[in-house]
Image (cartoon, rainbow, N blue to C red):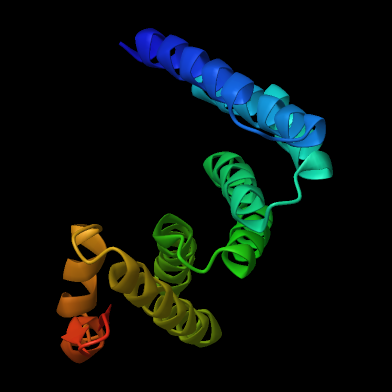
Length: 180
């Protein structure tokens, strides 16, 4: 099934590259991005990173760059390199503050680190753990604001720990549109 999806994506991407009026540089950036996604889906992370970094050298559109940065963060996070993952997720959010998956993943890293620190017998580590869990809550709140129907595990954890703020997630009709 995954192979079919990869082939379909490649065919569609090739068609889009041919019909959309883009510059040669933009096409080349997208080509590297596409190659990075294909390598990432096959577990070839070093190859994926090379392609993503090449794409970043060429890509000028902030929205497109945000997804490349996000994918780099995914690779580093999955490899246990959390500091680098956080760096790339934060860069992605700076370019695209409507990227709930980046907010969620930042929260997940802080949550994991917070739980690990809290399990220590050292008072300083326990305090650090609480601070990290509070940071996780902030990022998970933002992810839920952007994607209210996603991340039920984060929503439940926020409720169980008393960190859930129902009011901040309510959608309000202003007459000119909706906001959270």
